[in-house]
Amino acid sequence: MFWFRLTTAPGLADTTDFERFRDKVSALCGKNRRTMVFSTPSGTRLVCPCPDKRHRKAYGNISLFALNATATDKEALLARLLSELRREQHPFRVRTHGHDVPWFHVRIERMK
Image (tube, rainbow, N blue to C red; front, top):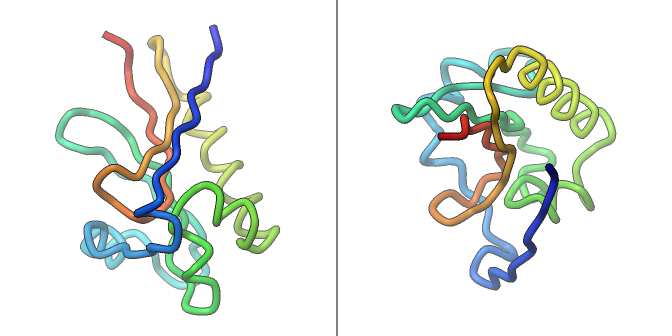
């Protein structure tokens, strides 16, 4: 099954801030790394682009990422997401939102 919902979030339109992920960035985004994956306490896995000072404004949300990220960064994120999805053995959903974190991330959540 596939469905999507699009909602507006004017407060996130031009906001980019990876502070909530800073500890993960330090540990997972070394030299030449374009993506990072980590799990939340609830078991949700997040696939995110690593910060790049040259293109930081491109990472605030999915729209900014699609419009402004480099082709290399887009390809790297999609390849990493596909790799993570192939590992999943249980029903799952994939989504993105920016309710609390103005940094583009794709969530892989197991269905309950």
